[in-house]
Image (cartoon, rainbow, N blue to C red; front, side, top):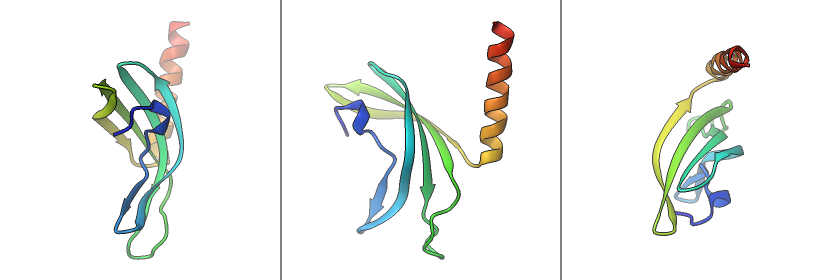
Length: 96
């Protein structure tokens, strides 16, 4: 695991083949507990092509100098991401 929050990634490779490709990330919070929103694609092993964009919110805890994954929530498609975004915008606007 990484000791630097900027180095945390969802890129994943197995037997020299990249199975998960990170497209972007936003660090939502830093510190002993770090939260990162990732945008990524997974490889379709049948077609050999990367699929549609997916999203994941992941929490890491820093212990003994390294970040350890603690929890994650995967947003499986753009429609679900839009619903989450719409709800958050509505709630934040209501607080203003």
